[in-house]
Length: 395
Image (cartoon, rainbow, N blue to C red; front, side, top):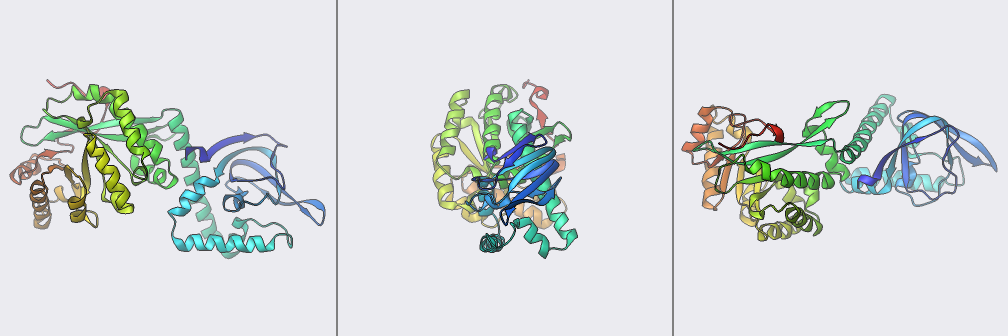
């Protein structure tokens, strides 16, 4: 999927594509000026001149017909190429109404072929949108496409980093394991939080490669991290996304990474949210059973914030429940939060699961969780996420 976006530079006079060429991609102008030329009544005529943040050639994203115009560079241009495969994936995740509207617009465009000047989908939408709204939509799309291209570059140039947050035994405070958390050291924006880019990677399919990169790096770092624990059954916990649980290749990829770095499967814990399971439950069940069969364990993250928690615990091979910080942070001041935390711990233990409470920042919260029987804790009380070089061996 990462090959579906690319930044290319063209010089003045270059032809991007010619009328009649086969096309499977569109172009977003990051900089420069493009001339659109079409044959009208047997004569070549300029029908449009477009610049920065404009999109052209976009009909090829959903129409397999030849190009209806020629695109020529007037001034040196930087273009982001958008392949059809990217749009296909995005459309799969788009509201059905939006997909329907796009198809209606495309049909109207097809009906006009040969009877009028070529008109792009963007131009047709322009006629129906207020200028301010159109510009807002275009700006948001440009921002997303640019970021998606930056993610592709970041993977190629190794701009992503792993930070590790300790997970400790509540009774002793000893480090039992670590959760692996990805960060992006952007050349212009500095350290970027995963909240600012993982959502887009999920939409574009880039999350698959990011997920494998995270797993690879965590397993590579595990021999050093392991020295920072003095727990009987240490582990590194790595997050999974819904897009990863879509086929057999994921299990094989996990096996290959484990073998390559010689990490015991029992020391790898894979974290998932209920969203991962809800999207494709039968496929997820099959893949999760195969992952646990090879020795790795599963943790359900953000427990209590989803829509089918009890069904998830009953049906899937979950070994660890992680209680969301929204409950632990308020359990000393909210009787309801305290009851939710206590009930969750009792439920997990009755099903043979360990419990990790997230967001622990004070000794008071830690003490209350111990009273309720919680096994492990994670939060600033025990340590913030840190780079590997800042993690010290256990004494």
